[in-house]
Amino acid sequence: MNETIDIKINKVKESRIKSIDFNNIVFGTVYSDHMFVADYYDGKWQNFSIEPYAPLSLSPGNAVLHYGQSIFEGLKAYKAADGSVQVFRPEANAERLNTSAERMCIPEVPQELFMTGLKELLSIDKGWVPKSKGASLYIRPYVFAMDEYIGIRPSNTYKFIIFTCPVGAYYSEPVNVKIETHFTRATPGGTGFAKAAGNYAGSLYPAKLAQKEGYHQLIWTDALTHEYIEESGTMNVMFIVDGKLITAQAGDTILNGITRNSVLTLAREWGIEVVEGPVAVKDIVKAAEEGRLEEAFGTGTAATIAQIQKIGYNGTDYELPPVEQREFSNKVLEKLDAIKYGEEPDNHGWILKI
Ligand SMILES: *Cc1c(COP(=O)(O)O)cnc(C)c1O
Image (cartoon, rainbow, N blue to C red):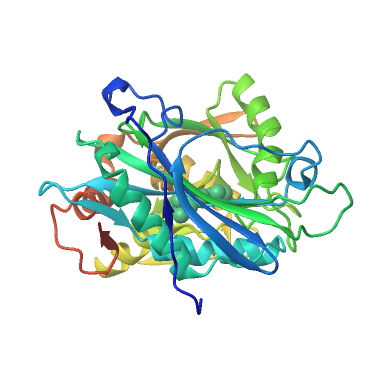
């Protein structure tokens, strides 16, 4: 950006914060007072503002409603013991937003605009970052088409918005997952690596069917053979077999998770052997049968680590060791939490303090 980022600030007359019961928050239902908004038109981002969180006005012919030209990010801010607010790896989200943008023909959001908007918003709404153990402020940046036009082409106008939601400690019961052998989330050459809205719409139906069978969510396999494991639900997925950490290589069908990257970074520092490559279903099933599948878990911003208790494949359920016995995933979760909540020094440059 060669112009300065001048943000117009229009604060709420009265904060809603006193009406919120911070001990009973259902994920994604409570919104903080303000949002950051930027408009794209005439070939550039402009009209930067912080406004009261409020409904938008959209034309019924708005392109995003019809063709889904829309991308998003998800990250979190944490309240440290010293009262400061710590955001985990926001630059990585800014970068990934632009990876998604390119694939969806959405104009890039300059990193400086993303970061300035985020910092300004958080400094105004920092009182919304919950203090209790495990709680955090979920941050949702997103960009979507705004043209009133129902022909199919990339929109000429867009909105970039950031809003935030206080969230409680993530419901962290271990989950039962089913290895999906028919439906697919992503295909080679497709949009699986992008956080594009439509990817999630397409995943709902297969997930619903799995839930009817008694599973919490799916393990997605590759579109061509269904023989290789890709992700679990909307998380990356990792396994510990014979002491090695195994996960699929991030590529065009696998979303490049920031939690994934953080977990792999710590694992390597701890001297654990990391195998990033094709994860064959048959190898995981065989390891489970032979009692060598020590751990299985999803990684993502919402839960950090989501433990997997049971894996269903072709009608057989494979039970994993109790969560308390899982050395690596418990240790990595503890370490990441310690960094996020400022209980341990941040040696990786992962924390932005507000
Ligand atoms: C967001 C997301 C992830 C996890 O990414 P994080 O950066 O770790 O939150 C993994 N898979 C999919 C499909 C996702 O949308």
